[in-house]
Amino acid sequence: MLHATLIFLQDASQLDVDMAKNNLSLLGAGVAIGLCVIGAGIGIGQIGAAAAQGIARQPEAAADIQTAAIIFAALIEGAALFGLVITLLFKWT
Image 1 (cartoon, rainbow, N blue to C red):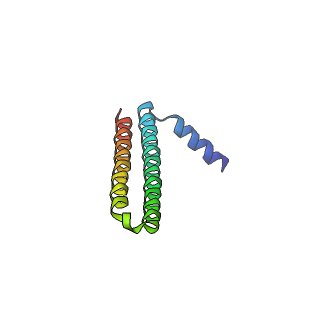
Image 2: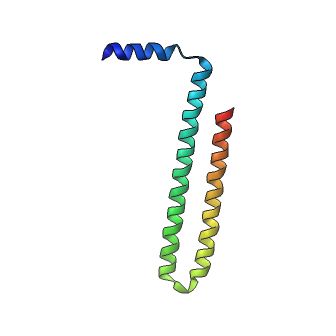
Image 3: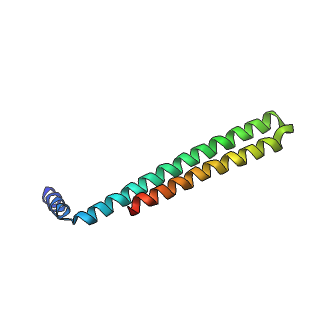
């Protein structure tokens, strides 16, 4: 087992520098977009919970609450798409 690990480390040290930079940029892009999507999901989940609770407490204001929730969700989706664009820019630079 130790011998296989040493061979793997020796092969990894012989990688081309450009290939290593490309692999690290792909890893960074994956982590960044993952965090961006997780953040957007948490934000939209909180908006949905708050909207449902608000409608349950004041049914007569349901239309206003739904409109505001849709606007807030669109803003969060815009931020998530901005994060995607920044992630792709980091990947290709």
